[in-house]
Image 1: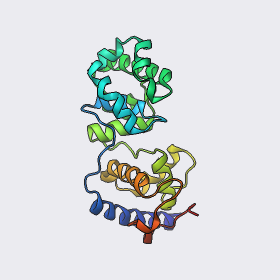
Image 2: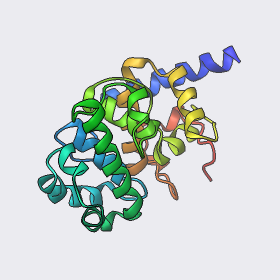
Image 3: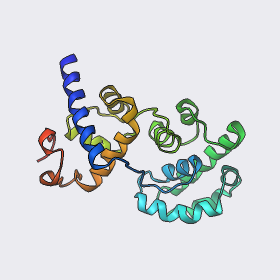
Length: 216
């Protein structure tokens, strides 16, 4: 077990080195100007493209400029405002519920701990890690979405069946200072090169260190 872990740590070290050279400053694809906006955008991003979320939040954040405005919003009106992101009823309920809790319990500001964040309606570890890492610069864990799941498996870094298991494997081999960027790197790489249906292995700068697990 230790030998396999050491091997994965070495591979992760080389992968991180190459990502730092290629993408020294990876950025989140969601547009936001505050931790509160990123929280809302991340909730909206479930089963929806970042491009669509950015289109919606461009006007949404002008209409609702604070957590108080989201907390006071008419649920039906909020549903209509975010309808194009899909699953809008559940998302609106979660956004309003989280906003009410943030206003009543945290002074209108997103709490800076993962424990407090995951207590909010509709907020799981993934959303909490996104907000803490990207908006607040707090490395609380590794964000695991579909891209991170796919790319980390193909790279032989994580084989877990759940997001929690995958995150556990990754935080064990990725240095904590790289946790936030590591998620961004794998997401960006998954969108541009290591795509779900047809990864472009020939164009991949990780080709020689990738075992290509599951790639046909």
